[in-house]
Amino acid sequence: MSRSAASNAPPESSSAPRRPLRRLTLELFGIVALKIAALVLIWWVVFAPQPKPDVSPGAIAQRLAPAVSAPPEAHP
Image 1 (cartoon, rainbow, N blue to C red):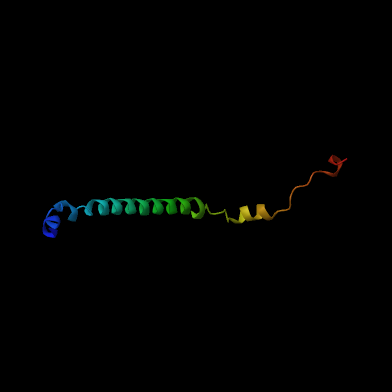
Image 2 (image 1 turned 30 degrees about the horizontal axis):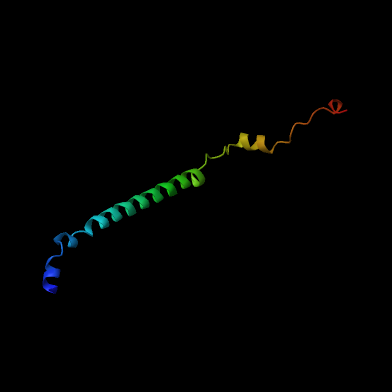
């Protein structure tokens, strides 16, 4: 009687796990791809190279020059 129960098992049961594994694999690759895209976006926003400052002598002299104050008669 146990022979007939074992032989009545559907033959598709051995191939059934393949579909969920394929789906799981695709979902995991999708999650990994989204995480990589998120990390690249964060790097681009936070750590992307900023424009280099002007280091010409004229620009530095203008930065270091004393501020122009208003004439004394302008203050009450």
